[in-house]
Length: 224
Length: 245
Image (cartoon, rainbow over the protein chains, first blue to last red):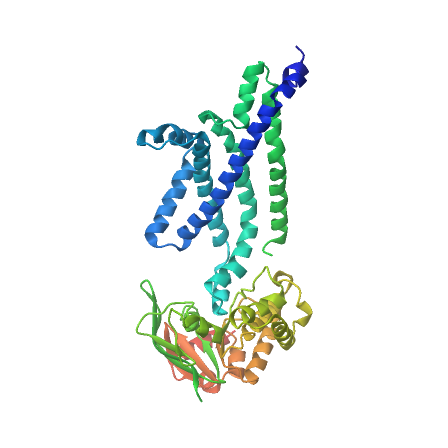
């Protein structure tokens, strides 16, 4: 068998393509759900961590530290295989979405916190001295400046979440990687794996490019 | 004359450090008061208490234009009536000069866009920065930025303007243009409380000079009296030290 027949076998590709496509859809759906849920969770945790009452701030800090320390694969296996022992049985999709969201939320919280804390104290003081309400201070002064700071690291985090969706294949979720390994076993040919790899690159390369552009843009503009 | 600001028994501790130690001070309408004194004497802390950027200890009391300064609903009104110009300008970097000036009147006073625009135009002319209207703060020199900050504070039509060492972070050649603007404001009757190291300005413009040291007001009087004939040894030492060079 030639190299091309082994790794880029057209017949195998055609046969397995529908399976791969269904896997890609699930991967994208899982990634988008975890990213959005992680953003919401992260913003809430960041605000609690910065402005909550003291016990809430401590809980937020512990949450962030734990979920930044635990490997996602370990968390996923705990959620999927350990929680049923306490009567909580989640589907593969729910397990994966939960694990990814919890971890992404912790990273996102740190990104938001750093973004808000990067705004100089003078900006808060000038807003207060002018008599702006808390709402206007946040909406007109603090968040517009913080958003510019957090967009590149947030996009980076999106890339990581998308990549980590592949871990869901270990809890039998039919995502892109799972479908690719199955097709590979079925056809006794690695072409589906190669195609899956190319699909991951195709969705993530634009994001990687975007991060580079954004970082450059905001570096040039400095604060504005 | 009515007092715009009246401060009584004001104290403030940072941990075990006493920043302010029983300050009593009134500022009358139209008066220009300059506060001088060595670093760490509490000058900046004092004026930052007036709009509660710094929380002071009880039982100190500050009344601004009839309203007691404390946390709560009235605070926004006090802050709207008290303009402040900072040492480090603190302009909003993501907004143009015009937007910097228009924002607070529109958000706090609910001024319409056109009226705010007219107001901004007039203020930019007053401080000589109308040519920079659509630039961003980082495109301006320090002196220009500080003049924008003055215009931004004036846009709220405050009852009193507080200046926290407005020229201390400026290059020497830009100090004059900012002091000129402040001098013109003083002459037009704006009530001002100025923390400054510019003794020439204090002497020329102030109605009253307050010398602080160690969180206390050591001496207060007409500029000529303070600069030419200080009663307190501490005032004399301070003035000798800074006027010697």
